[in-house]
Image (tube, rainbow, N blue to C red; front, side, top):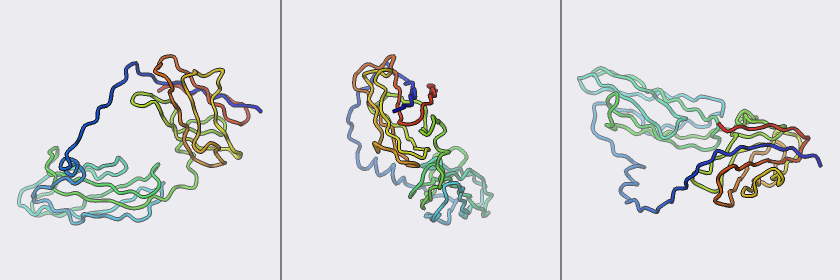
Length: 242
C-alpha cells in the first residue's frame, strides 16, 4: 500500500505551568454571565434579536433602534461575546433617535448560536447601559473546503501545527477532500516516539470532517517531529510552524 507522509512541525514550550483549582463565588459567575446595567439616557429598543436561519457564507444584519432621551449629546460603543458579532459605535445628540446596525458572520460556526452584545455609554467607558441577546442558527455551506487551507493530496487541515503549552493532547480539525476513505496513522520510522496520533473518526469517509488527535506521551518537549501517513497516492508536503 502506498502511503503519504505529511510533516507536522511542532511549536514547543520548555516550561509547564501547574494548574491550581480555585473556587469562584457564584455571585461573581452570575455577574459575568449576566452583568448589571446602569441607568442612562440611552435607550435600546430591543433586548432579544432572533436572526433566524443564516447561511454560513452570509453576513446577516439587523437594525436596532437607539434613542437619547436626554438633552446632552452622548456617545456609545459596543462589545460582543464573539468576534462573529459586531455593532461598532456612534453618538447621539439630545433627543435624537438612530439605529445600531448588528452584523453577524457565521463563517466557520455552523449550528445554533446565542451571543450577547453589550452597549456602553461613552466612547471608552465601562458604563454598561444595555445587553442585547442575538441568537439564531447557521446553515453550513455545502462545500466547506475553504475552512481547511492546508492541503496535502486529499487530506485537508485547518492549521499547520500544534503547541503543547497547556495540555498533552492537541487537535487539528481536518477533512477528507478526496473520493476515497482515509485512515490516518503515524509514520513510526520518521516520527518521535513520544508522539501518538489518531483521527476521530478513525476512518474519514469522502467529504467527512473530523479531528487529528495528537498526544504527547512523555515530558520531553524538544526536537519532536511527527509525520502523518494517509492511505492515498504518495505526495508529501511540509507544513511549517507559524
